[in-house]
Length: 374
Ligand code: UD1
Image (cartoon, rainbow, N blue to C red; front, side, top):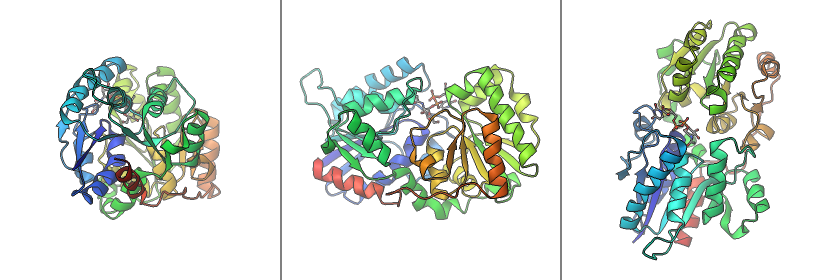
């Protein structure tokens, strides 16, 4: 019997892992799959609710690390995870996306241990994405993970090109698609059953959906003020639309710190909520009139659902969403945002196409490769 461990820690990891877990269960005579949760995200609304909505079992091991500085958080994950790896000696570890837990776990596994035991092979799901912006903590996590991991599973063609340019052998690169989209496709019937529209008293296609949590947008008072001004301008272009904004804990903290909470809550038509579970949030995505975001995953989910998405960042590591999908990168340029919102109102905004292999079968392709390798 082979043993695979998935290491996850933050909200976006969970939907990327769920389809892999389900696929591995189909091979339970050959392989046992254990889940290690680092505790990078720990609030019920940032973690437990996702395990429940995604049909995941409770993690086998919970490291309970919590929020710390980047160095402290990664160091503590490494210390605790090393103990787990020494005890479990898995045949493979799978890491997901680009969060601190991803790179910390990769560093632990890919190094031969002190007692000369061989390194543990690592598979990286959502490999090869690059924003080419090293001020983003996620970009550092991607670079570290990809240079060390053994099997690199890529979601879009740019990922393959980036890895090749970095000199990574083709033998390690597998273009298999997007497991987060697998989760979306599988769970769409349940997502549609969410009552969140009724609860918020809003109607389909008559609300904008906002999500913001990037340090570059929310950790500076100047940029957070610019973002609030952009949100305000929605009322000029789309005066009858509601504006739904589930606020991430980081953003909540910063709004309070900079004394900007009132300015946000006073915006006409705005509905502020706590972070939402997977079903409720994705229900909002499916019939939003448009989305304003700085999230990575939402650029992809909106592309799959063909919902217009304006990304308040200077760059994206997911260029296929802008080249082929419904995403547009505007940064904090209010004039550009208004221009595209105008197009959405007039019905002239691009309609988008679904990228290759975003078809619900990515986890199956990944697990097929992994079972051949271990
Ligand atoms: C992390 C990831 C980011 C991902 C995001 C999704 C890194 C470097 N960043 O950013 O890539 O897009 O998760 O949400 O890994 N907090 C809570 N409860 C929680 C978790 C966090 O209140 O359960 C608060 C804490 O005050 C913390 C802050 O949110 O200091 C930020 O959390 P952290 O995990 O450091 O970064 P995120 O901004 O969530």
